[in-house]
Length: 141
Image (tube, rainbow, N blue to C red; front, side):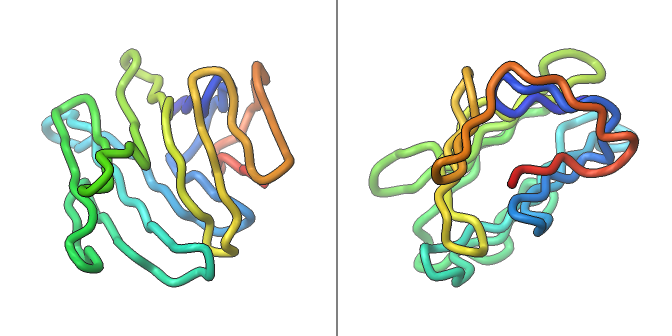
């Protein structure tokens, strides 16, 4: 599976997005329906887990502060009070999934920001790159 993170294309991935060396997002297609399925862990600035989504369903949701909206081809996580999009992933074409929008903390407390043009992790910025993951994870660090 190919995954776009902002304007960066990661070819031949296993569907895992590792951020600072820790798998934080897992993207897959359901074997029988083809629907997009996302697993995601959301942390605060000190590394405490606030929410955990498994197969596009919130399994843990601290203070019910987050909500998931999903279709067969997209999954989004929003903060309920502000309606801020924390994670948006959608199917772009049959073999390409796009992580086009997001803003959340890593387990190490750093802020990851993803927009259509780039991803930023603290002061590290990447845009317009193509990387062959060779069957492994997308690495953001």
